Amino acid sequence: MKRITLSLIFSAAVFFTGCKNEKSTADDRVEEQTEITQETTEQEGDTTQMKEITVTMEPKSDSQLAGTVTFTQEKGQVTMTAEFTGLKEGMHAIHLHEKADCSAADGTSAGGHWNPTFEDHGEWGSEKGYHRGDIGNFDVNAEGKGSITFTTDKWCIGCEDDTMNIIDKSVIVHDGVDDFISQPSGNAGTRIGCGVIKE
Image (cartoon, rainbow, N blue to C red; front, side):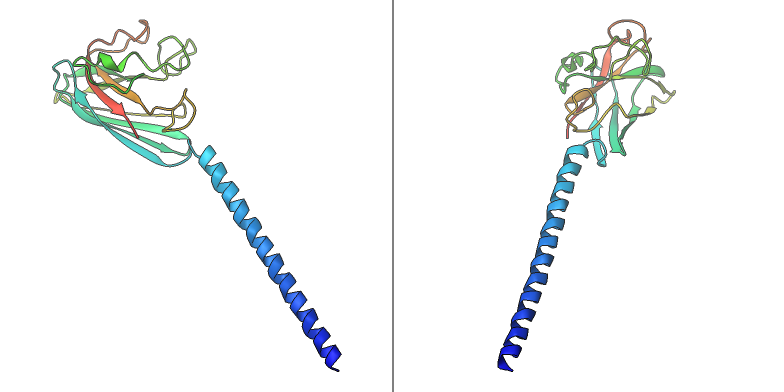
């Protein structure tokens, strides 16, 4: 009788240990899978993660420009919302430039248009080519206020694709209008505002 009881106790112990080991293994698998998923999300999440950056604009070339430009990344798209004051009435060009440097009084330290795909300057989406920094023009009213909203899936905030990443670029506002034809910058005139895009 003692032998039977001992056998039963031993069998039960083996059974529970086995269950515990199986549960532990299953938990390990879940944990491992979670780590892999997190890793994948971090790698792929560059363009899908919600991110937001606000750039404060500096006046250049003795202008009175003031304003902010906000970049919001969501669901694989980046939306730029820009609001300005202190401008003369009419149309003005706005572009992204290749360097995050607004140190020059005339904004020239920002370099040329951001053009990582080495195309001709043109209107955004043109079959003839356009720069990734070729945003276009916006209107300013009689009070000197202007705004523009622009959305694209060709930009990202901090991803590893150099043809999309807008970090370490700058926003430039021009005194004139982009004609979308003249090379290399649309004959947009004096740089009157500059803002650095940093994370």
